[in-house]
Length: 71
Length: 441
Image (cartoon, rainbow over all chains, first blue to last red; front, side, top):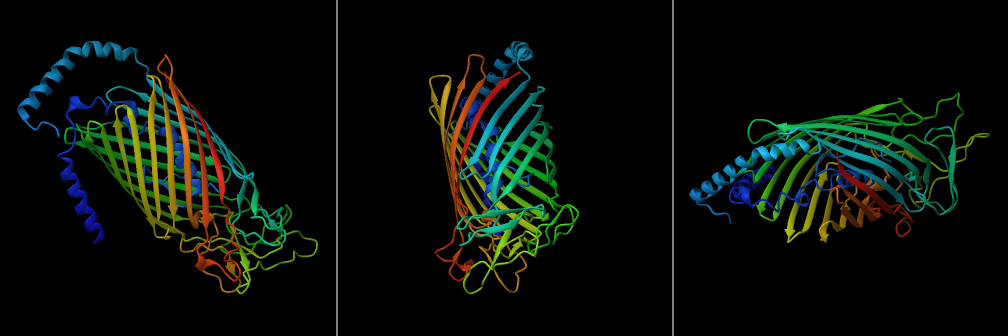
C-alpha cells in the first residue's frame, strides 16, 4: 500500500514537473558553477566518509559510502 | 511561468540556434585552447577530542573532458588514521584491563573512564574511476569502478547509471546501481559471535575464541533520482535509495561489558596464574548478517541575486530499526567578484538499533548485541565556515573549518540495575580543517 502510494505520488509529481522549468535561454543562473549540484564534490566526499564512519546511517545523496573498516 | 505560445518559443529557439550556429567556428577554436583536466585537490585534518581518532587525508578528484560531454573521472585518496576508539565496554569504578584485538597484548583503562582501544592505527588508499557519455539523444550513461585497501579491509565496487532528460531538459530522471564486495581480515582473526574475551597469548599460540581469518560482505545499492528545474533560480533534486548489505556486518573490534543482572555492575574476572588478561567479563559483539536500508533525500538549491542557498534533508530507515533524520544547509555568499564565504550547518538524529545494548546481563545471551554507540540513540551537530578565493588564473583555493559534536544516549529499556542516571556514553567533539585547491590543466 505504501509502495503504491509512493508510486502514485511519483507519477503525480512527474506530471506536475512538465509545467515547471525554464526555456533554454533562461538558464544563465542555473548554468553558474555555484548552482551545480556537485559544486562541493570533494567536501561532500570527505563529509560522507566522516559521517559514514561516525553515524549509524549513510548514503542518500549518492551511494551509501563505505569501502572502509572505519572503527 | 514560461511563455507557452509555441510560435514565439519556436521562433526564439530558432534564432538562438542560428546565433549559436554562426558562432560555432569561434567556439571551436577557443575549445582547442581550453584546459582538458579539471582537478580538485584537498588536504583534510579530522581530529576528535580527548586523544581519540585523528585522520590526515589527501584527496584529488580529476575530471578529463574529451568533448561532446564524454568525461573521465579519477578520484584518489590516502588516509592516515591514528588514535583511540571506544571499545564498547562501559566505565567501571575500578581500573579495567583488556586483551587487545590481536589477542597478544593487554591495555588498561583508569577507573571511571570509558574504555578506549588505543591500538587503532591504519592507512587507507582508495581509487575510483568513472566514465560518462551521452547515449542517444537525451540519455547519458555512466559507469565506474572503485577500489580501496587498508590493513584489515579491502573493498572493490562497480556502479552503473543512466539518466534521461525530459521537458526541454528541465527534468532529469536517473537510475543507478552499485555493487560492492568487501573483505574483512581483522587483526587476530574473526572473534566468534558473543564469545568471551580471553587472556593474552604469546606469538606461538592462537588467540582464544577466534574463528576464520577473514570474511566478506556484499552491498547492493539502487538509486532512483529526479532533478527538476523549478525556475530560473531554483533547482530541486529528490532521490529514493535502497541498500542491501549481507555477510559479515559485525565490527570485530567492538565488545560488550557483562554485568550483574541485578546491580548492573561489571562482573569481575581474574586472569589465569602467570597470564595477563581481562579483569572483567567482556564479550565480542554480534550483528545480524543482513541489513536493508531505504532512504529519501531531497536537496533544494536557490539563487538570491548571487547568493546561493542549499537545503538538504534525508530520511533513512532500515530493518535494524535505525531511523534517522538529517537536515543540512549551506549558504554561499559572494564577496566582491572573486571570493566567497560559505557557512554550513548540519543536524543529525537517529534511533537505536533493535540489538543495541549498553551492556549484557549475565545469563542467557541474546542472538545479537552491540554496544557500539553508533547504533545507539544519537544526535550530532556540525557548524562550519568555508572561504574560497578565485585567483587571476581562474583557479580557486579554499579552506574550511568545521566543528562536529556527537551526543549519544542509551535507551532506558537497555539499562540494568543502577545504570539509569549513571550511564557514560562516548560523546565527542571533532574539528575538521580542510585546505583545497581547484585548478585546471
